[in-house]
Image (cartoon, rainbow, N blue to C red; front, side):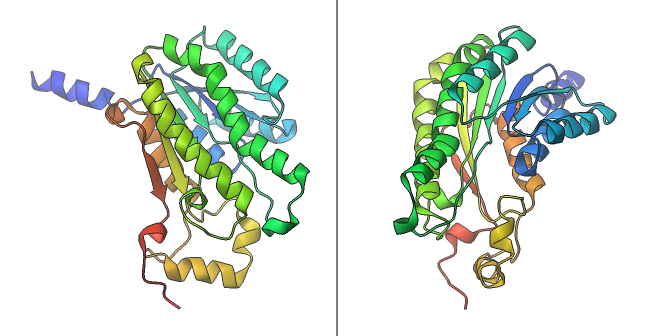
Length: 267
């Protein structure tokens, strides 16, 4: 009896036998998400725009014994998003357990300096691509009988951080998309959650982190007193995909060292 309970409990902390699609997995948080899911036993397909960088990552994962495949995909292209899902469907026999919408980018400008092209690019990359991929992946997720979507947004979607109004608006929309899909697709056994990172040491955040005044401003306002690391975000993403998180859906979880709950602005 005890052994059975132990076995059942351990299976809740494993992704063995599960399939996953992680967009933008060749660097930053996406790279660590692939690694965390692979360590837990998932079979993963990821994508990136840079073929050489993607191939280098696939080689690294192969040497570690991870089950990861990849394809070149520009997530701003509707046609390439459709091709990606077609490939994933073929590779995983029409079923998908996990979708991590990780792709995102930013252009930092003041609001009056943004162009029409800037707006279209940022909304397409940060919002439309994740929305469309979720639509396309829905039949595969539903067919798996137990699926999980995790969006990556930002604390810029819940608070004003002066990181760009379009980026922040798109991330705020991702937060709301999470809540709506959680309710609409629950009947299909699809859980939907969102991880909203604060300042994390990634290539995208590097320009901000090089600004000493801005960096110190973040650190002094963060209760834990430091910048986060990619693996700290990917650990939360992995948890939300586990059977252990089976009753969690519709949540936007900030992973920011306490930054968004700190009302005391230390100077």
